[in-house]
Image 1 (tube, helix red, strand yellow):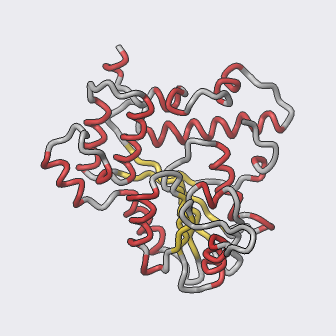
Image 2 (tube, one colour):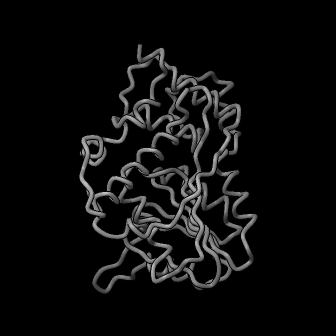
Length: 272
């Protein structure tokens, strides 16, 4: 899983701490401390939903009806953080929001929420085009690049792996709604916006905060994991040696079993 190019020129990414609402915090806490027999993967996915759009939690979520009703009415804290970034954009600036998962209920919601910015979307539902068929992804890309009223583009890994999103008409704001579980997806998203020498780009990684666990939230764990993987990969590119820890990080062990994430899926009491 080593990247042979691109990593050494990655732009800086600023972690933006996102404080969750009381309802989101309660939902997160209930999932974290639940005595259910959830696998690590299932628990990770539930906690990620809780910090992205908790209205998407499944009906079996261990919460009271009052809490569930509150979550349906709550504007996700990460959406509010995006609001603040977009409201501060310069008149000629544009934004790319990277949502590495959950098209329904996240990408759809974001496109509706930012309709006033002419929000467009590229995901697996937008045909790529082959033979004589229209390449609708390229059409959306061109609209975003060239139309002043289309200022927001929402993408997932489908677009991150294949399209150049280098915008030269002003500043680009790259917003990572949640760190992807793959280092490759992370690198691909960053390099879409900085192709061909485009340097007028700033990146924000939205990191939900949870103070009820000594190590913090799963967002913090996944950010730590991807950053460590990227650093190990850079060491190899520089001709360095692979340590045992580095070998584990770049192995096929899934993200939810890697220590930075796994240690945040269970409370100290549950691990005793």
